[in-house]
Image (tube, rainbow, N blue to C red; front, side):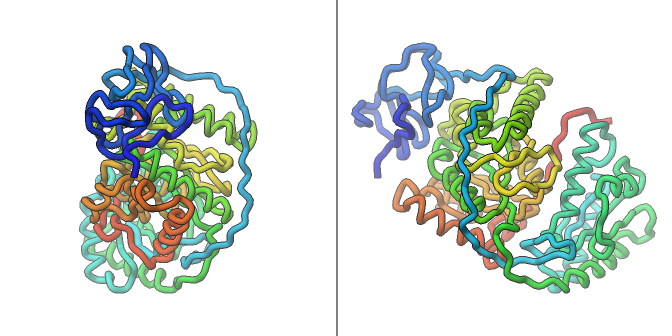
Length: 490
């Protein structure tokens, strides 16, 4: 195995895929210092202010002269990002025809939607009932745990003392949870006096199946826990009627996410996820890419793949509106990479974004979704949402994603209400954190070819979708939600 990779012929750096010692000859250049796995080394002299090129695109500029063989990182590189931009639509379409007809085993709901789990969910309208919700789910699992696939609740701090867009975001996220077909039955748990009370929440939720969705207002019941558990018993009986049946992959929706990224994310795990996205498109299925700030610096790649000018215009608004959100809070648009990202070899937001957007594969962008919108367009859609892991995966779940593919180079245990498949970018992480990691993409730089490994991985995804395999977040019972917040708390 080579110790480095030059990703694009035009790059003026290479990436270490194993630790490089000072003095080792790499790409015909002697390393002038030790360079850790995932980090970059200059292969030519790079003058001050000249762009650093990786993936064939600028990831920032040199803040001083950099010699061939030097470590290239945040001590000598700065982002080129500043503010909103004007963009020109230069379409580079890649139409992937529907040539595959893979299937999985799932549950068809009464409204025709499909779920991959047959669970009972407790959705809290407000944070005030979190403790009650915890008590209900404990008692319900004691009583009914052997009669249903799982009974789960999801705590959060909102639903009251919010205004405007924040309040709307809370309602949209929770409504998306209630509608999600992985839940065979849902108990909507309310306090009674909150802003997001049952009557107001129903206006956002819209039509619902009264057998599948039950509402419970704690202030109206003397023994709230016991009486709520009895209602869950009705939902368990309702859920028991659903049985698995063979379903085309065209009905599946997959979220595409990365978190705790490192310098190998854009080389192994994210391209593997991108290949899965293309396989889904070839099946007539749906994929959802979010983390808008992690498109900054790579956004034109996605914009040029928009199916038409209207989709391009929506993508421009998606990107510029998020930049304006940063600027309105006095924050720089390029200050995204976390300390863990930087330790793993990611230098600038452009560096991160060019790796991150590879999760979207090569197909056209067919849809643009606002926060809380449901994915309806076949193929790849872009979803409004931040880079924050829990907020992003919660938004994907609310958009209807049945399962989320989550790449990580540093490692993270976080999971969403839906199965969250963790893909390690390197074998060291996969071997150290077997309790977190479901798949090892590090083998792509060791002993696996992309074509065969993508098919192997897709088979595993279908096993998860068919409930033949559980993800580590399910096994560990790591299931969280977080709601996007911008404004004040009263």
